Amino acid sequence: MAEITYREALKQGLREEMLRDERVFLLGEDIGLNWGGAFKVTKDLAEEFGEDRVRDTPISENTIAGAAVGAAITGMVPVAEIMFGDLITLAMDQVCNQAAKMRYMFGGQTSVPLVIRTVFGGGKNLASHHSQSLESWFMHTPGLKVAVPAFASDVKGLIKTAIRDPDPVLFAEHKLVYDRKEEVPDDEYLIPFGQAKIRREGADVTLWGTFLMVHKALEVAEELQKEGISVEVIDPRTLVPLDTKTLIESVKKTGRLVLVTEETKTGATTAEVAAIVQEEAFDWLDAPIKRVNAPDTPVPFSPPLEQYFIPDNKRIAQAVRDIV
Image (tube, rainbow, N blue to C red; front, side):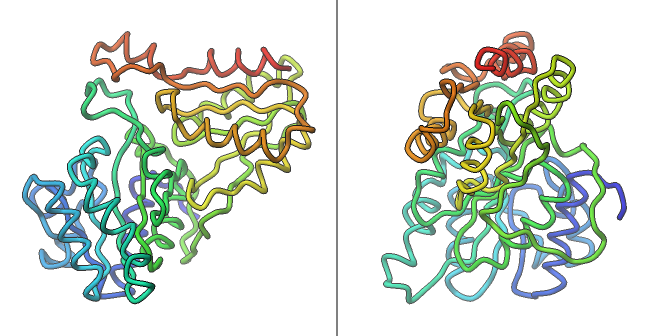
């Protein structure tokens, strides 16, 4: 296995699927010959596959999503890139009212094999319109699947699964994870949706998080081990479908749960997960569930304010200490 970046692993997955199935094509702003994507994920793919299969689009998110939906229901397998997740707001009708509902509305007579790749999260001082984490919006939309890969080995296997899925997938990435390296298998592999991964075994508290927060959770677990606190870290990998079995089994073992995401707190995925555990594992809880999220404000542009806004290791560690 080679050690490669998250970015390269994602590109490998896209390339392998384009080689496997000629119906797969990419579309989005600046993804082609001249730029290779805002985060360089699609770099060199236009040179290999041509501009018919790596298509630059106008700066119009509703056009990108609408064209992708039309292509999907007429036999193609589009992978549409929305440069920043915040900008999906310009295509909510196409994504949430059309793509997500078509199988249901047409009684199963059609499917929408569409992947929408986008980027969430702060940390680059890109201000309120390019830094949000909006995954709970799409988790709340029946008909959409939602993938949230945090590691290079997962992003490759999950993008391949997403492309082969007959239904629409919101495939979310985090802008601060692209350069992280990990060993990634050279052989073809797929990762099923709905299977969380226990990143670290522990006995005292379960720590569940998404995206960059999984990496921070692992750092916190290592730190707290020195204090005699054993932390189990769970990476959900997909939010829809959500692996509740792995989570509940972990909570039954540890008796405690801390949830951490970069979303603003009200209505975040952490609220839904907390409710599930409250309903299904209340008798095993030895302490209140703790949530660590960003405050309910727009993402600040100011570097020190943004640093304060995003949950850090100190806040996560303190939440664990508070209930152990």
